[in-house]
Length: 632
Image 1 (spheres, rainbow, N blue to C red):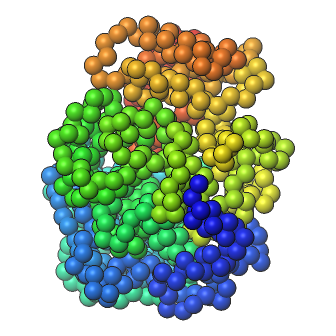
Image 2 (cartoon, rainbow, N blue to C red):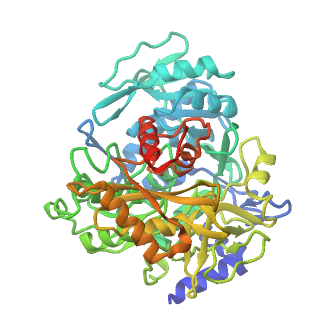
């Protein structure tokens, strides 16, 4: 047991004002707070009211002013295009100040919204920081999102300017952005007055006079802009996440609490020191990109890697090891799906030995449930700690983690360890009461959320309460289901939607997936609950095989069915499984289990805006037919 962790965790709950007030001393302020926490209007809590700061100043200028301007700040590595760039903190400051001048020339100021629709290029990071520098509120939309989804965000955020590029680049294809945006403008009720376009060599584009402006021309004529103090409680950004209705759900992040929490996590959770090289293999369109490509590492003074590539196919399953070796990465944070892809292509880990990983110390996983088999494989191949942790777009950083900067706990496969400081997490039954140890229930966080937790939804206080607070008063409902073990470790088993009721028994599809993932030939898997006239719901499994496996699919399906019945029992009623070439996923790698379930139940559904490749859905339909599911 880590005494330092226990002391920090206890104080964070018993004296949150003292705990977070002390940590806030590591962040620069132009005006101190009136009090640490404003809890006068639950559930609308505010951290550091009365204080003023600037996130860009804290992330960039302060390091230059302190004599650290020549340290690496941003490392861009694009195996798809062959491009690479390294920006020091001083160079990053100059580029950010210049682009802030561009935005100012287009009338963007404090409180204005700016939509950013860009690929993983350095200019995208510069754009985010430039907005923060002026006190403008950025909303990043994953480059390549469908026009209808962009239009919803245009109407909800009402941006004054839109920043984009001529294209995104994927393995083997170029995705032109401007035609998608033109469609979005036709759909949307609101369109920005200025569109600034970064020309990429892979795609030319004609700019519309009076509205569209060339990025580089605009920078050349702009005067650098200084940073603007903003209130700690002012919004830094809006990040849209999926909701249960067609209305966009814009998670708001403030400036002050966000800077305090994220600065602390780089040491407290990840055990990095300023100057260390850090890599979050994600995209700036997701919360991981916001928190751990851009803000947290730069706030803490770390070099951060921005990667435009894939874990496999750019050019092979060794690209992660090449990036780690070349840039001296100390810790990598990625999604379990990335490692499942690597394991599928290189199950023996042959690429690993070709690179110098001597400076690499820790692998962190998050973004979806990390199955024990994947963690064990990574541990065995890398010979380094593999640390699972759990968090959400709404929180901005880990709710549960093995906080390495406070002393390491023993790893338990399948668990992200314990709630992080500031998070009092309960497992609640349907009646709202705490569930007994070992029993699955709804995972809920007692209010208030710690700094960086969403204070509300953009222009939707009512939706904020309805989405997160109404079902369990006094708590933030995470939407995840899980349990505590006898040692106080928490296990995130599935989304609450993925708890299935089989003949009166509440079962976790995540537990069944653990069993399937343990099969020697399985690279990744998913289990869904489909409607059953007798039992209410029945589980159906899908497995993707490792590269080079040539055994009969029926034989493998029968084996995984037998494994579930042997390890979980007949109560699981697990009788059907199919081998598929791939699983439908979002661009961030999350498996679209709800969509698979809707296909199996024959329901009508919209194609998810975040899906990586809609054609996969037809493959799932075909795989379900022999099992007796899907549209008639």
